[in-house]
Image 1 (cartoon, rainbow, N blue to C red):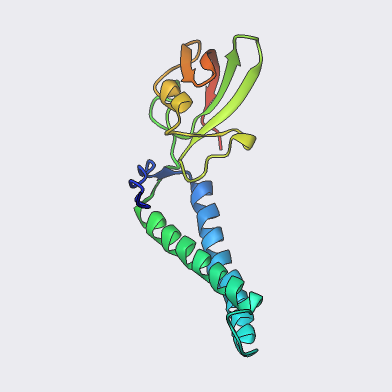
Image 2: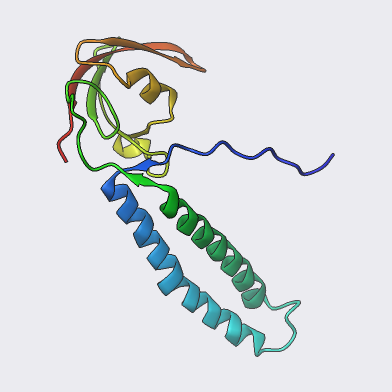
Length: 166
């Protein structure tokens, strides 16, 4: 059996201004801060002679490959992203960048913001626009009901509020 993996489906090419800045900050950190430090460590480790048993050299080279791979990805991804920083013309409906308050069947409230796949983080309520829940929300308005199909079963939510403030 080979090691072939089919290519991953690319995420949507939209991002918020804050998400784009976070990616640029990560790129700067990797390229201007971490890479020179790791390069210096590898250089010093290479002076010590036998590289086959030199942990600093081996792990430093591995980290350089990881950094270079991520830098290539970030450069390519930043070129293809579209920054969305203006609210849509109809702010009563849910589109990219919307802040949404939902109420589940048990009466618990949930707050989400729909963002691009490069910046989602459910721990802070950032929901990827490619997720099943975001797809169910897009185009809906306040008081609409949505049903989200998940491995744990279907879940129903009512949209309580929609906003586009910062």
